[in-house]
Image 1 (cartoon, helix red, strand yellow):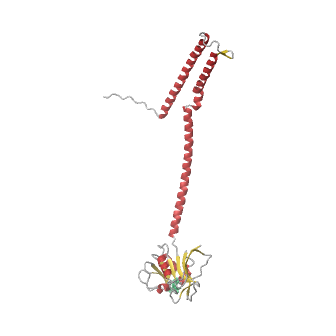
Image 2: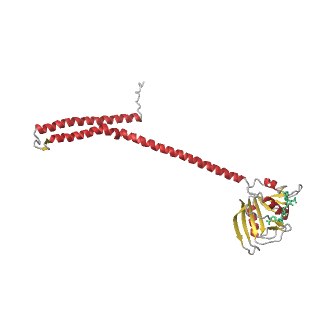
Image 3: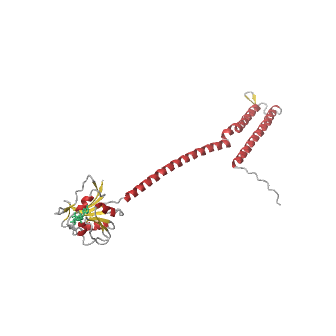
Length: 305
Ligand SMILES: NC(=O)c1ccc[n+]([C@@H]2O[C@H](COP(=O)([O-])OP(=O)(O)OC[C@H]3O[C@@H](n4cnc5c(N)ncnc54)[C@H](OP(=O)(O)O)[C@@H]3O)[C@@H](O)[C@H]2O)c1
């Protein structure tokens, strides 16, 4: 009903560029041809003007008629035009410009690709090292930091008659804040030295007595290994004494929080010597004697080397 539609010719960008270039060349050559014709007519006119019409008949340069120089100058201009159309155009024309541009773009692209490649490689390395340090952190996190906490005199005295020897309120505060919310592992004797279990801590008591009875919530175990196993959900279980348990724990603990009381005391229970070849002191805070504290003391932290 509406008849056949004429197919619209599809010209892509490259074809269009070729056509434009060809049109430009045709124009250039046409202009050259017109120049050539004008030059020929002009040259004849100059010769006639001089020889027939007698214009500037007496004007000579080096004994040669002026029109010869005029024609030579024009010839030079025409030769320059010719040179531009056929020679210069080849290496400085639009096509040449485009080729140069393409070359430069290709070079830039290569550089960008190389940079991208380097960047991806670097990114991979960073990601790998991040994953590695992250997994390292996780593995470190997974291993609980078994920490001994103790107050010991200069002569390593820690107890007498199943009792503490001194009362240092800031030391008790520190004990409370460090162990708050954690598992506290202790020997049966230390456990029995408390009037009642300490609030907000999970008590793990070690005894050889198979039928040992303790209040609800207190975990009873029969070896230090079992005590550590019972505390494995805790990132930092504390060994809180007494003398027998400290002695056994010294070889496996990761950290010691030691309150060193700067005085010697009579005692029946002692803390083992801290071996400086095994332990590295990482913190040391001195506390003066005052109204609440009868002795000078220092909060020392040791970490296994
Ligand atoms: N200054 C401080 O920081 C500090 C801290 C805590 C305690 N203390 C003092 O230390 C003194 C108590 O220490 P302590 O050495 O006499 O006793 P303890 O270490 O608290 O407890 C010893 C008891 O633990 C059990 N035990 C020990 N090793 C065991 C093992 N390998 N397997 C199974 N059970 C094991 C045994 O219980 P059974 O006999 O029931 O089998 C043993 O009698 C007290 O004077 C206390 O005040 C001081």
